Image (tube, rainbow, N blue to C red):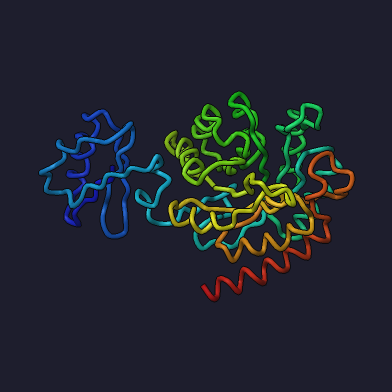
Amino acid sequence: MLIVLHHSATSKDVENIKKTIAKMGLKPVAIPGAERTAIGVIGNQGYVDDTPLKGNKAILEIIHVTKPYKLVSRDFHPADTVVTLGGKVKVGGRSPYLVIAGPCAVESRDQMMKTAGFLKKLGVPVLRGGAYKPRTSPHSFQGLRESGLSLLHEVRKETGLLVVTEIVSPEHVEIVAANVDILQVGARNMQNFDLLNEVGKTKKPVILKRGLSATLEEWLASAEYILVNGNPNVILCERGIRTFETATRNTADLAIIPLARKLSHLPVIFDPSHATGKRDLVSPMALASIVAGAHGAMIEVHPAPEHALSDGPQSLHFKELEQLLGRVKTLAAFVRAKL
């Protein structure tokens, strides 16, 4: 439920309404706006009887929000959210298109230092790398785990780059958050609700990837778990969905980007590497995401993709990433100027 107040509503009116909501066994969330204040109501499992609120002269309108997500929706938060990464890099709203790059998995110190040095030279501010790797087969490389985290922390300290890594278990939240700047919830864990609750209790920015077969509603409802627990710093990431098509690793659903932006205020980025699974498709799809309205892209790059322990066929060579970044800069400037 969303309660819209009159322009003339005072801070005392707001507090009285919040007290009434609390007496109803629900949680009030004040939503200050440029023109008027609104109060969101969360904690209900179904329709809310608004009788206790009727007749309050400070209330202009009561809107019953039936979506399974509320804090994530533009009903509760009309303006774009801009998430700040590491206190210096912004994503969302009118912020510059953000490129996050790095290998699928942390394999060695040499691999990570080479990649980090190259990204820093190109001006890419965020390095990705998986320490914990949830894999379809138990025989596939599962990541260096705590040793990988230590390497990420070392790279972060030596280069000044921001670091993002995937988190796969609620028990890992504390140790992972202590070593990186951004947490990533992968597609396989999009509906790991215990994990979502735990990352919601941190203030670290969270990249939430869309599940393999998740609907938009399910994706946004998963983001709601994080916001409800107090963490507003969520970035949605479209990474392709599973369909009948086998020519690509997944089916890149670019249409979901403008739709997610229409329904939610959260930043939306795109992962062309997982969406396609093919190196030669990564660049054109990354560029297409700019036109579709994405706020950034997460791209896999490796010093020697042919020898990568995971996702080598979809990882760019250094030179390919350099060429892509030049095109990204040109297209992003053009789209911003025109739109």
